[in-house]
Image (cartoon, rainbow, N blue to C red; front, side, top):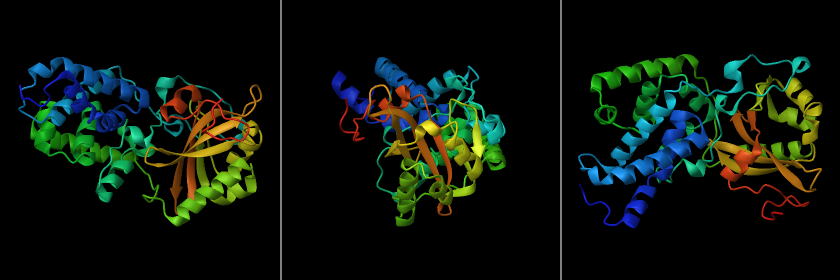
Length: 335
């Protein structure tokens, strides 16, 4: 065994250094924030228990990725494939809008950037990492068989050599290259994401988001319409309803979704794009209660989509957000 860590506490520290990047890897594999964190915790426990057997033939990082991959493949053997509403049904016209929930394990989930994207100094590397956790890309990954998914992430996102991926997966370089070719072909057929977000946000995008917040908090449908692409998309997991087009979106918000008037939005960094924590007025306690995490997609100077993930008792703690705001709507003042 190589002496990477001399004591239990040193080993814990050494393993923890890899937690964020492993979480990002498992999230891309599984499409679930909570399953990804569970997978990483399982990986850490397995590594800690078997560290005495680690012989150092590969780096500790490669060894951890091998364990994490096996954990994810075991979890994916259940056959569940997470998706977005538009992967499952056609857009519903406003006249037929119905809020029909599906189980949690159906849905692709949002994930805070800070929990899955490690800090890197190379802007190009950071941009690739963010693009690889956007909802559309992660949804496309879910269409791949699990081992093809692992190969594509290792090779295209993490820039591993074919020989390294082959060693991790206990297969040949030829098999890795073949799997990568098939995975690329599948993504090319079904993955279309023209989201264009600068990192950091440029002035135009920042102003667009400021106008969006003003329009949403003011519940000004005319102002909101001016910010959306004509074929913009709105989704609301766990409901399978999704809407396309400004008239259906604003019509829904003015009728079925009218209780969102007078809400508060606070910025979050989620899935490599801008987002907001959405708090609604709380008629029972006063102040504001958490309602949804919004993931915003921007294209050609307008908002192409906003995806509202409900079921707030799960999401807001994940983002480190309070579960109640006072009447001033200050997230730092928790009641």
